[in-house]
Image (cartoon, rainbow, N blue to C red; front, top):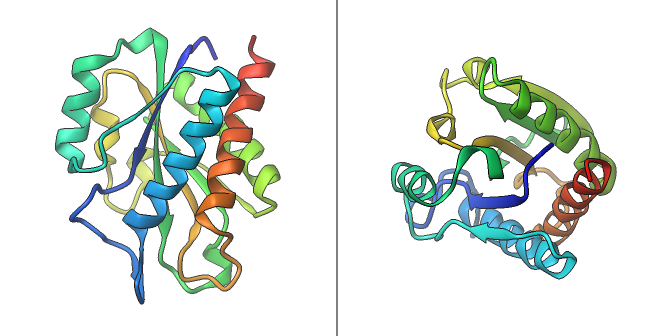
Length: 179
């Protein structure tokens, strides 16, 4: 992998709840996942930074680009889906189209996370195949991926804490394989 630093961002930022089910919103879930993951990675000795949760997607991109260099960091944006369809539940990871380093990391992350959380691996996709035809994080100077951690509307959804722990386990496993 060649990266020595992980940057975590909870999708959408505060004030942009996007996916929601009753009182549970994607932004609250992704903040919990990012925070739990960051604490576990820090305990394991993997340098990790959390993008401030108050930032919107455009400001998050600028914040990361101002602070981190391409070759040293991997940014991971955490999202959850809202689909109630059980076949939509599981792990999917998006990477920049044509970026081999991102695609390789995305593949490892999808496999490791799906195994750790015991949810289906829905695949790895280039950002250009996203329903919006782009991902905001494709504008980062550092390598980056977007990970969908299940659905907040699914009856099978594990807790944000479980996803945070599983995401940290997946990242630790990738670091161990590449060190």
